[in-house]
Image (cartoon, rainbow, N blue to C red; front, top):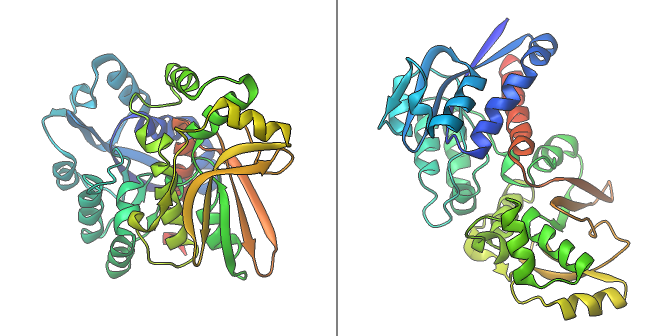
Length: 341
């Protein structure tokens, strides 16, 4: 039995989703890959839990839920210790960096990833901030230190796109990517289309359901989709760009009247990301109601236009802690498989 030790820094919804995914798939992964994944450290803003021979994933979730922090994990909790200190305190193989997205400085994720790579550790992240600001720097650092750096979960949640493009389509030149990359705005626009409700009313509903954040700015102003567009432009098209290079328009000015006029002509309004070798923009667009772009709810989708394979469309849930965790766990397993070859 092979053992892979991971440190999860950031134990919010996604970090807890990773713990839950590991717990629920332990036996299957052992049987299929002869691999055991141990969480040897988990950290949040108040402290950390550290145990060299592995923490109980379900206990981590329970402690976080009941006491507000993994720092109160029985016998192995540590208050007032930050992520960088945790990485010095425990021996691990892979950092799972799932701290909150920061599109101004990329911190604390950037520093955590930099330290892990310089220490020779593999990294998996769902964080869009540092990737949209410092993509080339982080990729170069991973290469210099001969470590794996995976970030499938940073775009589209459970929707496979980065690994799909890089590993399944290596023979094709991908000319462009066009799609819906934000589940929150897609939910809002879908509900407005179905019910004729106002933007303000639908946003409030999305917040009550937990689909939209208390501060929804990054989603509704198109910034989240813009970050994801930058990641795809760099990772799949080989461009060198940052968030500043994206032309961005959000959905806050879309009215029920505009949506109704579009419906009368057989169209829906969607927040569409357009990524090619000379275009990088996010904004509301008219799409035919019979097209692949007319997906509803929190679904994400993207069409990859290639020179050899034509157009290929991928669809998946773009939001949700367990859905995002599924992409993170896939990256962890793929890193382990690459280390065995």
